[in-house]
Image (cartoon, rainbow, N blue to C red; front, top):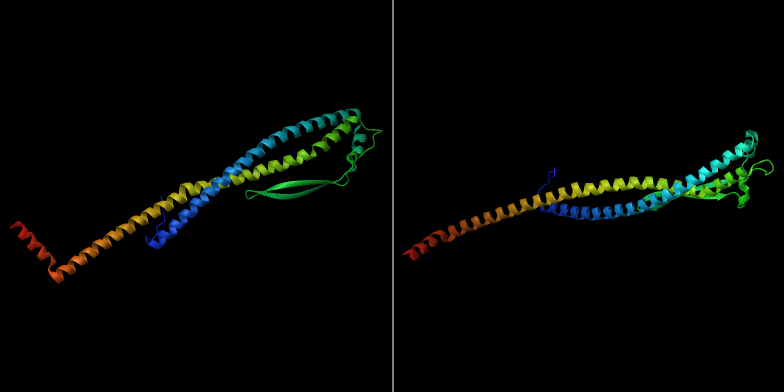
Length: 228
């Protein structure tokens, strides 16, 4: 129910009607935005699930190979082998806009294009299990970064969906009904005022006719003649 008092004038009525049109248009646009956000959010959720399963399996395999490498190598040799990385990775972060939501985009560049540069040790004193572990981690890096993108995107889109939902509900259950009620109230008051004005005009007209032409007396005389 509307709690704000408004002056019942035609200017205010026109303003409220324009406000109602804008509110209904905004309500429709926000509903369309919410539905599209939900569609893209669900697609990201499905991708996130697939990526997480793949990344977890790859990390599990890499950890298994590291355990095997540690079992066949001494701690000193393993630490020395991994102490000085040969390859360098640069991560560039940008954003792209989806339905007014800026989601992150990660781009990875390596210092060299040689795939063998991921091995920062010689092969003479290391285990092949260590090679498998390093290779599996290097292979899973793109999926790992994509997983980070998708999870952050899901978080941002979920926040935007919740905010859009609140705006839709505010328009649907508060703004639009209150505006419609105020328009109805002002319309009723203006109609009542117009009827009262017409009644006053009719009374004034009758009084003027009576004063100038004795209108009522003539009506009474005519009625008496017809009765006779």
